[in-house]
Image (cartoon, rainbow, N blue to C red; front, side, top):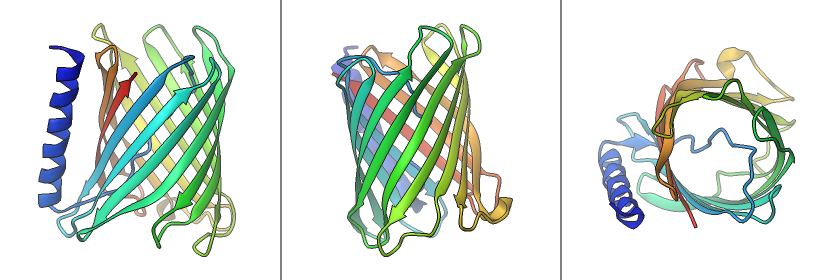
Length: 245
């Protein structure tokens, strides 16, 4: 099957899945990933993400669309649009721009990058935000990769919370002969420096992830996150899809 045929098949599947999740009363949550610091010169990517939380009491879901362009072997720009539906009210929540610079670049071992993000809200319940990220990947063996990211954000606007929002994300995966990676992810949101609260006041999630490539230009990721603190969602199910030009 050609790459274009695979792409069409996946989009049909995603459209069907979104329809079923909406009919089953789903509540959207987290479309974030554990970002890779590595940059490939000249690469251009389109991405789509779907995130839902089964609750049985709402008709919410979230879509994310992004476009990334590597302008050199160490610098990349990305543009993100996030849209959701709540009780039949479909709206774009915000636009986001990202600039990433990979300052440590090796074939194997530890790779690292910094990233600056700016978010412009388009919905009444979303604040503006400027965020700094430190992205890392470590090859623990030829097959095992660890990713560890740290985020610090300052919100702006009427809905902005005091202090600096802190967050960490991590992922441990193992590859197999089919270019598939299987592992576990963990997301930790520590609230702000003005009021951290205790563990259960913060959002802590962990869950499995499977990602890989269907063809050279098509990537996918399927996973779930489960809350291990009271403030986190009980369960979220996510699908990521990427297409490289």
